[in-house]
Length: 137
Image 1 (cartoon, helix red, strand yellow):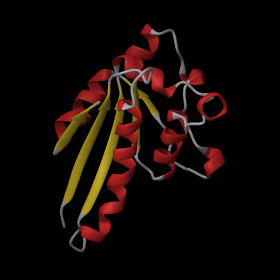
Image 2: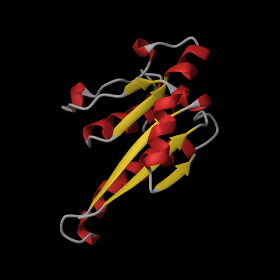
Image 3: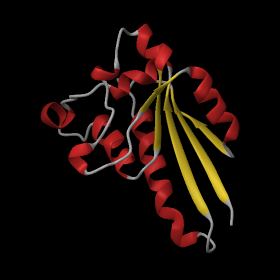
Image 4: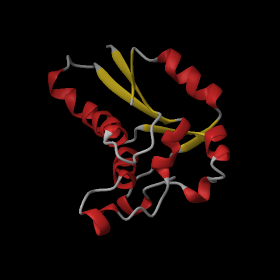
């Protein structure tokens, strides 16, 4: 039984870039690889938003309404629905004068039990050290 740990670090704002949404999409899709694994093997994915990347977590995005695109907010909620570990850097939220009330914390309307965690950067660093594969977006 082996577990492959994947870490996705989102460090860019979503403006003029698909990178943050791609990170979340890759993390979500990593959960569909079960059909290719040996019995008992697992793939887990953690997503951390750091630096300007925390701006992707702002709630009440209007991407569908204004641009006809699914929002990064809905991607984050789908990752919570799949029980992915979503972390948001506490220090970077403070830098942008944002609080937990300003960002996506849960996806209760989707029936998700998992919630995003606002954590110090030291906890994100610890998570990165535990990963077998680390991808930066």
